[in-house]
Image 1 (cartoon, helix red, strand yellow):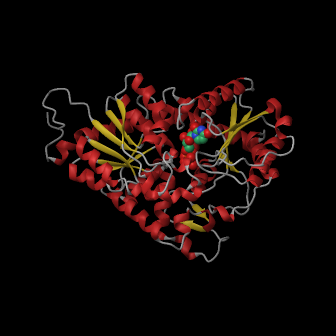
Image 2 (cartoon, rainbow, N blue to C red; image 1 turned 60 degrees about the vertical axis):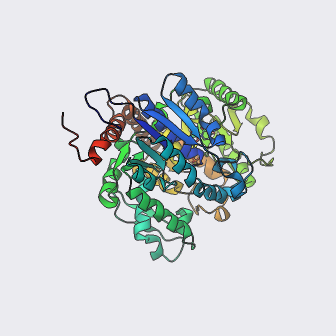
Length: 494
Ligand code: UDP
């Protein structure tokens, strides 16, 4: 396979295996689409219900002539005790998230079977599926890892795991330095992802299995861009000996299937899209606050109420996406919707986030700091209010607030990744943070300028000849050259 004896090289075939979380699936499918746009035959391995979430993007890309497909394998619902169709972190109650992790471990056999059967030229695998490293080795093909986060959080996590600086503090209020990074990064213990806070070392051990597997990879493909994170690519290479290819922001390359990006392409998604865009059309440029907290996080009723009052009190038009976990919640403040009228729009469920952020009416983004959201906010050139909730989101917050200077925190005071520890953020804090982001004044203006410039750099990165465009060219080139490399041939000959 892969010989180039003067003829056109055969189209490369690359398999992509995304994890069962929307925030992993969306960018991995965008990456597959980018490969397909360069003539690579891209196949996304996915389970049936997850296929429905990406079908709009895949079908749209395939209809426009790109060589992109899905290949299905079963989700082990019965084995882990999940109802049929519940195949994604976003579609199960939070308490059932460990069942998704358990299901992950049961997919080894199907991955092995399909990869051996189809024998692609390379695998781009979510880091959760660490066994794809040894399958790739057996098949003699390269495996490229995908972490669904940027290099800043990756490097902070790597330093935390290596140096365990949080063990040197005795309480939850004293900050510690995360050592050795290109920028000074301080944290307090409650901001750490749960696997580093837990006494139970099983998760930490699983993490090191993932890290070990990553070492057997060609490197890591990153949804980010050099102009924002190149110092961390250098660090990652020097300290973790890991090569990286920036190919993002991948959402910018999404080709118009934005209405149902990451959700089922049904009437509700289309109706929400129409509603959002129609409402935005009526607003002044840069006047709207967009608030959204990702694909799987939920707020308590008390928090939703304060958030509603805070957005209202800030006095700017707002578009707010509220996720409800199936139960009817009594969070709406008295008379809220009547008072709101045309001043605000509350979307229940799913909004076309990339399309909303790209609309001229939007002037700021209140975000939970999931990596995709952070990057989509950066790409849109918008200042942000940060409201991290869990996982590595407090680390992502540090990038935009402290390193880049494009965001302000939603509140000061006690903050935690742990659901049971969270304190309700008051409406007054929400309104003050939104005002800081949207208001006049030198600081707000400076933030807007930095955000706008960074947005321009993000857009330039994915244009033909831009840094991420070239990153993808280099990665595809390495995959193409792989057979010569492992056969010991001189790839440069001829
Ligand atoms: N998203 C969206 N509409 C919504 C909520 C989320 O399009 O109403 C998309 C968002 O654009 C992003 C992804 O879902 O691409 C969420 O990923 P992120 O990393 O921000 O957060 P997670 O859901 O993983 O916490």
